[in-house]
Image (tube, rainbow, N blue to C red):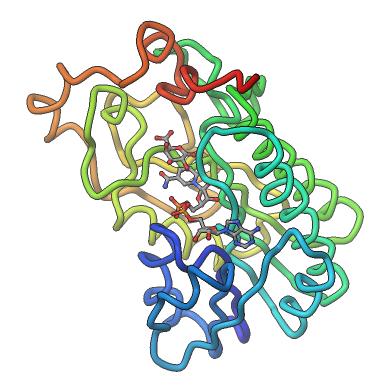
Length: 266
Ligand code: NAI
Ligand code: 15L
């Protein structure tokens, strides 16, 4: 069992989903977010709540002290102007890993995103090792985070699982989600497997359910994690396959969907 586990971005959508299941997998769960959002949370029983803006290096160092493993969700989660993404995702993820190195943290499960490869055309089958084609500032920041993870593994031995999460919603809502959806149950299982699998090194895996219309092949990475998705988007097909992704033709053509129709910002 993990001794002290840190969950960043705990007040966000996925943080709220994961906090309780993660509490069961460790002796001490520390939940963290920006002070404002964190104040709205009722921490799971026994969890410690620590406010932290990860873009501040000293605060990140204080947060990581005594932490054995991290599920890192904190940051900007959508496409937008560069500056906020630079602070929260690029600076924030660097600070988190730098603090993890100083603290002797053993493993980070990093919430990367499918937007690292979002400029590949819809239907193209991808493996985690295929060319990255980020679809905007957000996708670029997630690619940077994967680089930070790699460097901290190769130089300092910190293990990472970089999860290129698809669409984590209660149900698939449109045609794209029939390919990209990950159910809440599968997401919880994937994050726990990423924390607990032995010797993962620095691994990249997409995060999706067992969707027959998927674009991302993960069999090898999932086998290393001992993860098998239990759900599929297909039962929703007749309801949502005629629902286009918002954002016009570019959003229909490329895997990143609606993020492609956001920006530029000048
Ligand atoms: P969210 O936006 O609901 O939650 C993100 C949390 O991070 C928020 O509570 C926010 O206050 C916090 N945060 C923002 N800036 C921060 C900073 N500087 N320091 C500390 N905390 C900060 O996002 P959601 O949907 O819960 O996603 C969680 C993670 O998973 C994000 O990193 C997102 O990019 C990633 N992801 C999510 C997907 C999804 O379908 N929900 C798909 C792919 C990746
Ligand atoms: C993401 O990375 C976002 O955080 C989330 O809001 C969704 O838009 C998801 O990707 C997606 O591609 O559906």
